Length: 293
Image (tube, rainbow, N blue to C red; front, side, top):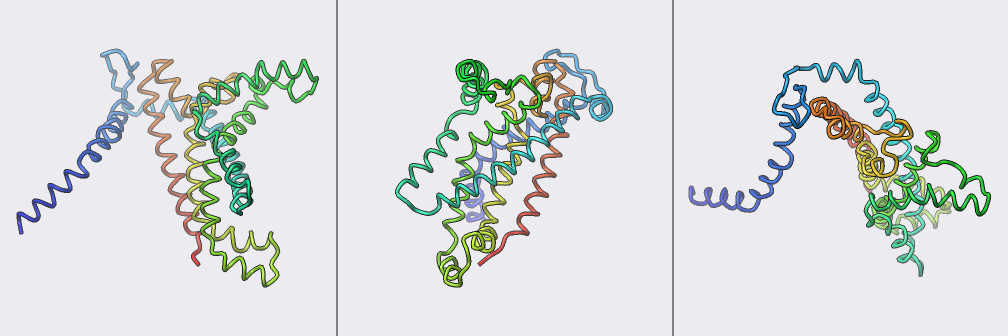
């Protein structure tokens, strides 16, 4: 009996040990170090670390107006991004879930931007919205091309949202297509025989049965919005001014550009707590909306 139990433990360690060790090394230890550094005034380089207790957290809530501004922009971007990308992805997926001769090619067309690096896409769009649009404006005289999409704070948010939606649309569309295709045809055929219109079938049958996919997509879009960093770093660098400075970019700026590593780790802990609370609430809310057939 003891030999059997020992063999089971050895098998467990053999198969799950490497993964467990990786999680500890990559996630647990850095997180604990992050908590440790958050109570120091440290530049991230010097051997001298001044213990300041909770002063970094007090400073963030009382004196750091930039963190509040970055948090509000991140929240604003996340809400707009979640609504736009999920509504568009559901509409397109509803259409592409029906088989027709170009459906596979059309799905590939929408999915193509997702397999390209966000950094590469940001560089392409920075050129298009800058010199590219300037050239088109001089050539055509169309006012749309004359707008400073990245230099005007009024349009910078729109630019970041549109590029993010364009890049990630294919990923969310594939999840929704899988959700639509999992709906039994017998239900749709029965409703069609009963005389239900397409809109009524979508609202009363498809959408309620699509809620598991909605839960997943809202979760992914929420975490993407809250953690937005790559596109801001490449496309706007938080500008114009600090109009598009997200929380992730603000933490990066404090840690690696301003050498305020202790303050940055304190901000990252606060941000971690906010993301955790918001995602747990979101998952519980949408899980309760799911229906079974």
